[in-house]
Image 1: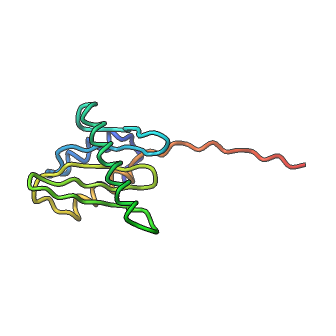
Image 2: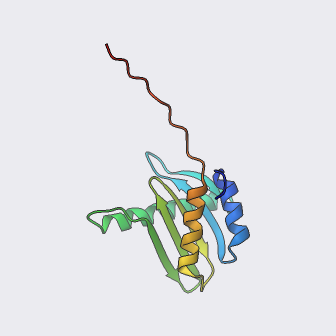
Image 3: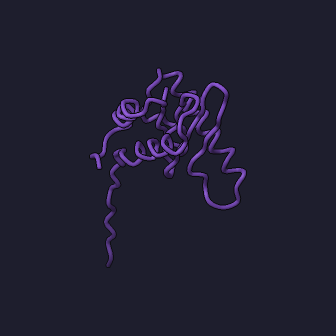
Length: 127
């Protein structure tokens, strides 16, 4: 197990170990869409994060219960993979013929390796 790291470090490691991943973005959904780390340039990163968020919105709209945790969209030129953990997600563009299970495992590893924001403890006074 690796120590927690920031999103850019996690994505750099992803590109080193995965020959199939061409680009990836870690983003966070909430009130606004926020890119936490990316391998492409800023404009491309925002577009890829927006695509990932739209994929999640659409997939969630197709379900009545549990939220979608992973997606795959295959095209003749490659595939788009997405893995979500709560409000955070990572979306990646992969080469044609990439092994689905391996790519999804690598993306889950990226999310699992990220540093989590510290939560501040709140003191409750009682009288």
